[in-house]
Image (cartoon, rainbow, N blue to C red; front, side, top):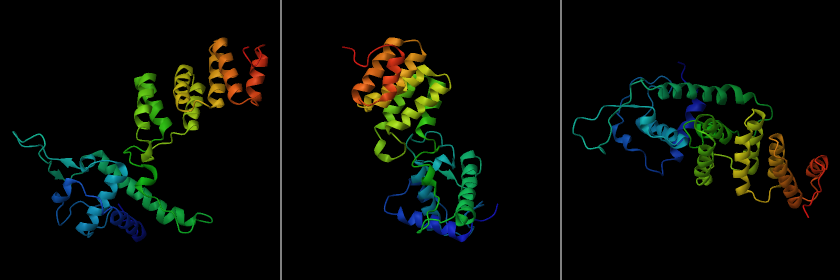
Length: 262
């Protein structure tokens, strides 16, 4: 594997230095003075620099050292909280092999592709793990996370997971804006999952009670399911929240009902 160019390495070292103010993982004490099996990072990288790079990986992906590194089996009778001894040179874990690939990908972006970007921003913006991962080992957007849960564990589990993730919304890992869930519902409906789309929108309405757009979308979904009464109720709610909502008025007109229930 080729060694990344100097600008990429310098970027990682800078990222590590910026993270020095927070304590590193317990595995720091295990890191040897000389390294084996370095295939992407420079073979003569200093111990301190390597620790800084590993810290950046750990914090930007929200993982521990054992995410990529193999741990030796604990001796019989060892306490459950005994520290694990890591085998840093081992390539047995797929996560470590993927990390090498990702390092090369980011290096290519920063050193070969982005320099040709027309009218590139100054100061230049460079790619790092956190650019996509934002504290998650798997850099998925919120809609992908919820869709996967709906497909494998059901609608209720997706609603519960959304609420759980939202409690940590200040971390910035996901987009919890109204439209992120509205668009998820639109995609679900387009894939024939109307019940899941309705559940997502009703959940979203709990956080955005004044949204006329959510009511309009719910009106359409209930109408597609043949529930005319609920469709009318949501179209009327949309017009109450946004009186100039011509879309909802046209829907109500087509259903032969007035905009107001009284």
